Image (cartoon, rainbow, N blue to C red; front, side, top):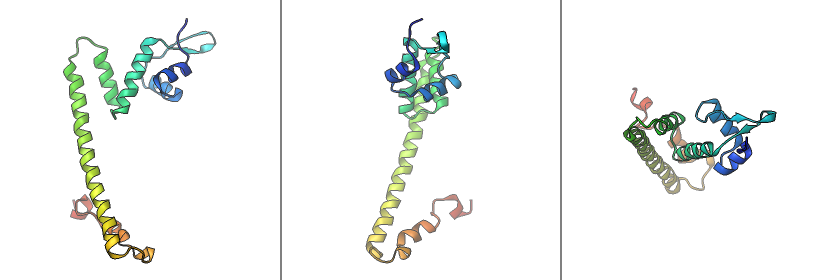
Length: 146
């Protein structure tokens, strides 16, 4: 049997061998055939599937989402709307995280501005940033007693 050794597959797909073995262990990548000496051997189909998996992960899809997407690609009776729905749900999650990151950015900017205005250059323990970090956020559930 010809095919690619795990190192060759890793190089072709820009994925490291432990990750390839992990994907096999969780059933995301089928177990390869073995050659004499029990060496794994992969084919072009494996290259394509692993590239698909890696690209999904680059886009931030969870392992469960990748499994769901992969199952849609493997079944011609399934609708592409299933893949669209998975991608749409992920898009909503990404947008939510972006809102959270923008709020984090605003908070950090306020910390820095407050320090610049009031205490920059003073003693470290008196820095306003520590006061800000030591106070509960008004948006945090603990601050409202929820």
